[in-house]
Length: 614
Ligand code: M6R
Image (cartoon, rainbow, N blue to C red):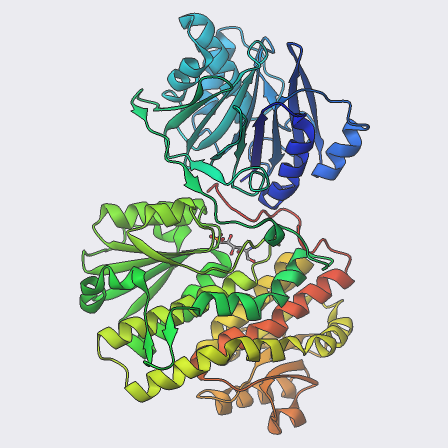
């Protein structure tokens, strides 16, 4: 993980770096640091903690310099402390470097460097890289650009780096492999670099997404030059950024998470806009149409993802099997990549990722690709690595998600998967025109239904107050709502640090029922639909053991009302779409409980938004 930002221009670099780091803080917040170049001296400021801690540490911003690099860290090698914070300096102190990724052979490199007389301050893999580059430069008497290129040939692992040279205020060197890096091209030889485009968007819309094993020279007068680490020259491909500054602000909300929860009526609408036609009774996705034959003839779909994206994948399993009649397997990307999975050329692999940068998902894609499967990406971040690595795909159009806990990304992913299942079902003649039409009508009413579900907020806040001190919680769902139970439990764990488990409701009697006593809140999704009666029986089982029942029910529900301690009503919709509406109160619940427990809702401990390491 980690976020990196750099600036080479004519203004003061410090404000650009700090603002950029705040935007990238979702990538890690264990420590933060900047290095600025002024009058041939590098001034280094770094400390444990968040970017705001760095600002206090720097004090009055007396840090001049129109060239600088900055870093916000999610610790991998070495604990989060001041010394391990980036930037790191080379042995002689001529170079400063920031890095996102993991240098896997850093131990070997470090030992070799120590044997040649190098001394290291930190425990990080990054410092090793700074020393290596400096040594290569002095041994080969070459430019820094060339020294970085040569050094990277010795590196095994993942990196996005920017290197600054004390003796050259007109250049920065950037390089990447497996970790993302974007270059922004400003006016008059001004350059910006970021782990994503968020630190860049307010200065320029012209960006270059670097490819793996590329090294870039950013030079005030000579411009931008890119070569591969094998020294093949590349022509930079400049793209126009599709990102708006307002989307990166809190817009009046106290937390990004709350803003993103409330954005869902809009983000779901943006997701299906232009893809469904009520008049024609059709769903159209260009990502599917370009490879129509593959979908028509697919023997199996494998869905890979992590965390919330994996939960969305589980809903996808129900959707594709129910609507398009294609067998589906859903895999944790981290497990899939290290198995020896049987993959055939008539399999389709769907990779789901909000960030489009998750290392495990990326590795799973590469494995499936090498076995000849067709890879389809469902990503939110436009231009992200996964969206570029896949054969075709479909963006979720949820807009930037900054809160570490995924909310609007989940509902957009499930919306896309629903559209995909319907588009494929049409092509395979697996769905009746009547059911298709009914579902299209339901999809178009989702924004209103999600809006109504959001109106449960006051009731959810009240319930949160009652259960905020719980030590454990159970979440139960069945059929389409089983993945929602998993997602509800994940949301509670990750931001309020309450231990929570999601289960298929009927599985409870095979073990978890032993946990139930009068202290245990059990959140049950008991909406009208196929499994309703069965779930009601499961509620009875919980009640018989004195568990506290909080049920998400369809508006107007009478029976569960008499059994549950609390009910939260949501509007009625088709079984296939219940996940999108029923997850809303669970998102709000985890938000309120986390807030009441004094937790940092947007930046939970130990986590980062984009997990670009194994
Ligand atoms: O960016 P991705 O969707 O690939 O991220 C996958 C997980 O890291 C992510 O969903 C994580 O579980 C969230 N924090 C959940 O809220």
